[in-house]
Length: 50
Image 1 (tube, rainbow, N blue to C red):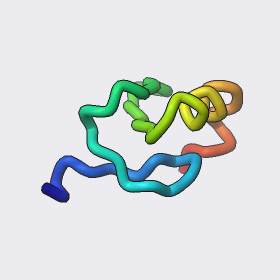
Image 2: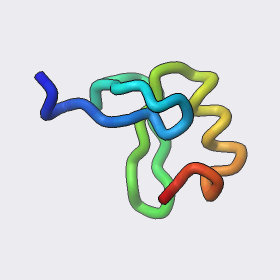
Image 3: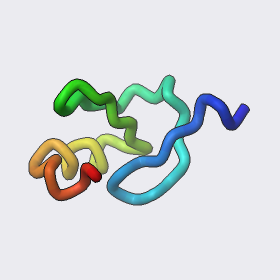
Image 4: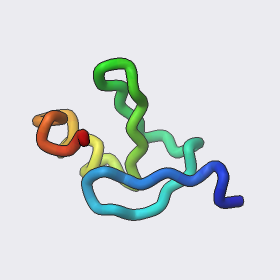
């Protein structure tokens, strides 16, 4: 189902909202395909949010 898909802000991959790798920044939840993408985001989230 595509309605549960979001874009990983680091690599651009479509991921499901039920992935284990998530971060909340300024009240918004971001979802990641892998722990590496999450860690990259967490180091400098302002670089990746729009």
